[in-house]
Image 1 (cartoon, rainbow, N blue to C red):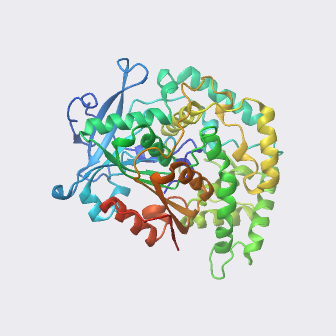
Image 2: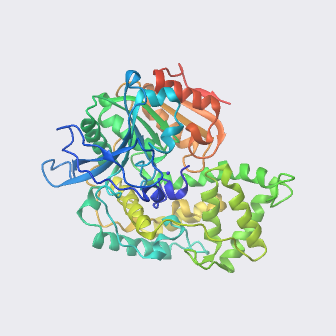
Image 3: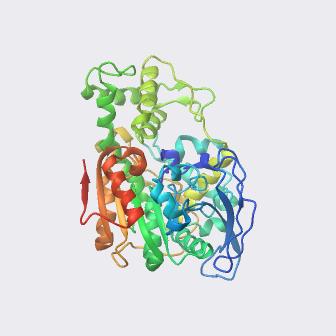
Length: 492
């Protein structure tokens, strides 16, 4: 996007599970023309108050009168109409995530004062079912390891470059015209159409992970249509790299977080203790990954069907998102040392994974052009493996964007300090997916538009998740009252 790597900006199978069982049967009128026609959402596990509709938006904003696509939206209305301020967009991570169920889920963790002040609005971004959807028709093997470009055991990028070509050719063959119009800028434009369809002059937003970049772009393109904006677990907005930079951020993200796992995994009395000293956990992990590179363990029913070195590294990456998931990583390490493997994690249906991966690919590859030279990626992987051995070069590897058949239709949006000062960033100090260093770049780009709360905590997603009480209070107060700290704040 908690946001696991299958819910994260650079990991392209993000948030597919949130789509399970939810349909949006009602077609609404054109954005901004009439009020939406809300209906009860289909599906299980939803708050009975949650309602659903669709908004028609242009597929190509350079041809606004051309073909239309649909954006599925959901809402739970303000719980106290007399206190209602407006609408709060719940902007998901990914790319390839959806917030369609979030009004019934994470939105219900919001304090009562916030739920009174806002209609909670979820949506499935363009390309994500049940919005008008895309699918590249990828093979099962290309859905493995969260779609990340793990190099071969010897560090070669030959196989990942071949996979990039194979996957990009499938997207060109099967993705359809909509795939070419999936981008962060278009998602931001869609959100402004949703705002108009809701009948709101301005909207507030809570963007998480990749959603922070969407919200920042929306605030750049439509600054005077924004009210109170919370950016939670923040991406570096560098317009020359965008998704390439987010992928590379895993290098420092893992280094920031692995020591916390090592301390936990060496505590006396821990039933999943893997070493007697924290200093021993890292070399133990590296030796085990190298052994599995040479001698993978069979893992029937999994994809891939073996626990190799990269599968262990992917397990590490996944479970560093949330300290509550440390036991899963520890159990995998303990089992693999004994030559066995725990059961494979349950994955969403492949159709949902293919949909999410296609949306993620469209976004990452259409936002900015990626280098196409294998030599470029090999050089980066070699440097990364030497400096950051835990991630084995993956963060500088060749995603399918290295062979993407389409050129970006417009430059990536440059985030600036122009616009109202109505943005609050909240950021954990140790975040594997969106490291503090990248959040500081977004803070710098926003200038006087923003205040940043840095939280002394570990894990991805700060507000109402892996942060702390000080950070939560600060964000809740801003959403409810508009009051921000007078300057950047550190929450110990």
